[in-house]
Image (cartoon, chains in turn cyan, yellow):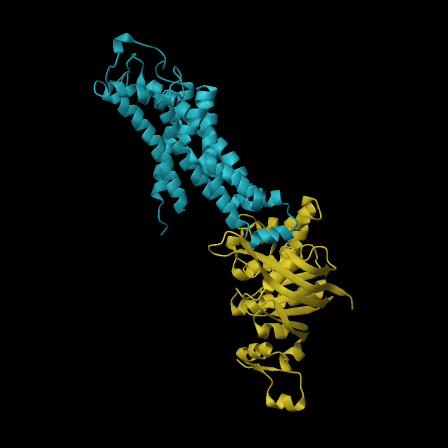
Amino acid sequence: MKKRNYNLLLGGIITGIMMVLTLTGFFYTPFDPEKMDAANKLSGISLTHIMGCDNFGRDIFSRVLKGCGTTFTVACGTVLIGTVFGTLIGAFTGYFGGLVDEVLMRIMDALFAFPSLLLALVFVSLFGSGKYHVIIALGIAFVPSFSRIVRGEYMRCRELDYVKSARLSGASHLRIMFVHILPNIFTVLLSSVMIGFNNAVLAEAGLTYLGIGVRPPDASLGEMLSSAQTYLFSAPWYALCTGGTMILMILGFSLMSEGLKKS
Amino acid sequence: MSMILEVSGLNAFYKVRAPGKRKKERHQILHDITFQMEEGEILGLVGESGCGKSTLARTILSMVRDHEGKIQCADAHPQMIFQDPYGSLNPSMKIGNILQEPLRNILKMPASRRQAEAAAMLEKVGLEEKYMDRYPSQLSGGQRQRVCIAASLMLHPGLLIADEPVSALDVTIQAQVLRLLLELKKEMGLSILFISHDLRVVYQLCDHVMIMKEGRIVEQGETDQVYFSPRHEYTRDLLSAAGISRTEEEEESGGRKCTIQQ
């Protein structure tokens, strides 16, 4: 009997639900996420406000929906930049080796030596904050780790017989790199993309928490979590709901990448 | 007879990083290799593992950059069959696409013709057309090696290097694949450099044999001559280790048949 892959299943379900919520957030929220309502200031969980209201009387659920969208966009953009450039650099260095490898990997090492958050911090303080700057900053900070993984895979693959036989069949180096080898490292790439996504969610939250990431009125999970901190005792549901949403988002992706590794 | 391959004074080197040292050291793998190969013959290359057989093959196919000496090949695109049929087929490519690669890259053939040629070649190696859409993981070891043979023959090469093409296969399958290789050789007029450590197979297949030891060719000549009046000590050792010798009867009559003791 085939063993069920519960990690993949559960991860898929959680991620699926989060996706639906995120997508809904782009088009519809039960309340205007920006609308302040002094009467409902920090009101608790009720049927109308299912996650309660924040310190300005804004509906937390609506803001969570909107914030998921922002966080998701930032994480996706970050991972996209990291993957594309990481794969390119990793493919070239790993496949060719030699001087190209030495030079590019030393640059990556230098980049890697800084914590990604610090790197993003420097970037944001140089070019200003806001959603798109955060994406670029985090994206660049994510390139080294992706390029490392991809480089290792290419170094392993270039010695394999099918690469040699592709060479004999007249395939160019570029064709070997991206048509012959790339599909074979897809699973490795996919699971590192998912881990990268999680790290990006956390990094975005971290940056915003420090007040240099996504700026209000753009709602993001990190920004909400940081303002919820002040009301941790008077309105615990605020922090719980936003934090819980973030945990679910990350959990879904981690379970899925865990499941993919197994299958 | 014209020559398909002439190699003279060939030296090849690998760079190896010795443990604990930063500088890479240049190791000589092949020492002064000289041989010729006639068109249409099967030349056996025998030697223990690690003696440089595969390096010689790779050097002939210009995959080893660091070499000195002359390699003259009458064929523009010599091909190779690898030992391990599990590693030499790209697991993420369909059989049909693997077969079409050389036609696409070198001959720039249009897709429809490539398809037809690939299917025809697949039939030649005894596989049905439906295998075109399969992935290598869906095939058995013997079938994979048939696909490898087909892929190496797509360009109708003059020279084919077979690097232990059957050592990874079951004994029953080995015979089938060798028979197929012989048939195709006759049909397509191939010259085959057959690398092996199996002296029996080499005896059955090859017109000429070279014995290699530690990067040097210690003996070469016609198969019968090398097998039954070996001149070099190492050749004698190899033969006796494999249990190949002439029976007394044949010794007296001077016969050329050998008995291969099981």
